[in-house]
Length: 243
Image (cartoon, rainbow, N blue to C red):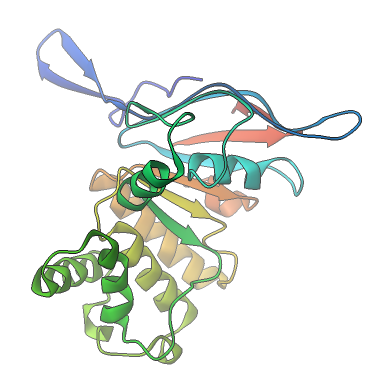
């Protein structure tokens, strides 16, 4: 499943020549089968191509395979068969430690629940995402401050999460997700806990991150959310089709 031609998919370095953006995600004939009689295909021969700079929404009802697809894309689960390349790296045969490192450095996660730690400031919550890679604390602070600036939350850096609104908490969670400048921003129902006003604010932020070059995949059942993406694919009974 190829991404459509558009500014996110190609660049024109000289007249008459087009260079496609590199693939961030490349699924080829991926299935995830759970043993039963008959076997349950949570994903069934799924192929998907997402290029750098794409903004893709994956929609479908409960039980359609969205969570299994999310877990596969996020390297939280392995497919039963098929191929998954992330940034050109074939992931299906990697050892667990390498998958963990690849996930930590190249994928930023945004969830419906914000998963911010109480008792830590906003800045500290974002800095925690950098502990895995080590490095001087001063560098971690600068990177966290830069991420907060991207989401418009520098004025809340010293606040604890419990003093923030739902929309502000999700902005901090997004800052934490992008602090390493990951190849892929993977979002699971990111507006599920927000009212309509805060939903629009988060979707505006995704638009801005997309303009800055981030590659975004949003798993959602909300038409309001999927309508803002550049591409939309639907999953039903583990099968993916592009709309």
